[in-house]
Image 1 (cartoon, rainbow, N blue to C red):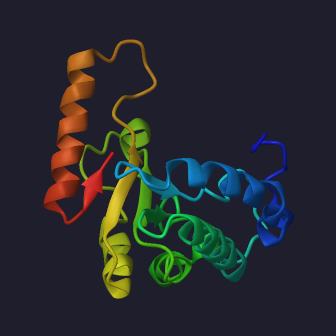
Image 2 (cartoon, one colour):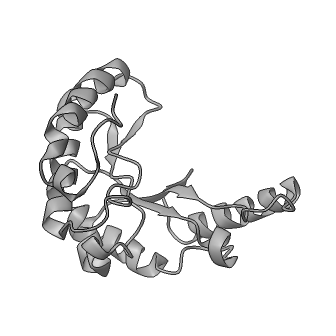
Length: 180
């Protein structure tokens, strides 16, 4: 049901207020009293849109979506589900802070897979700017996703566990409020 629209630039400009908002109105009330829930507006918004969005348009999408979620579940945390500051429509640290600046967004989000692509077992290479963006908003930053294994059948379960521990420790030691 929720995947029926095309998530292109036009959808992020205004199309989200239809079926997507209806889905939010359906699902959020079901879990609004659970202490275990953090709402993520969308998994990596804009990632597969084909581009063409502006920072202002994504900020509006985040703001309006978070505002609706908070109206239905005012005591739960809301995050964007964003990747990190490298997405072109965010324009680096300042843009990353700007799109997370809505008063209805409680957490700054990072999803990263640098290990899967270049073997980085520590924090994402843009961590300093991501952390600074969150600090400028006085909001905690958390890692909603990270890669812990190259796309290979030869990676052992122990190696995956070692990489995961290394990344958890690195993020928590570097100021992340949490790591999933």
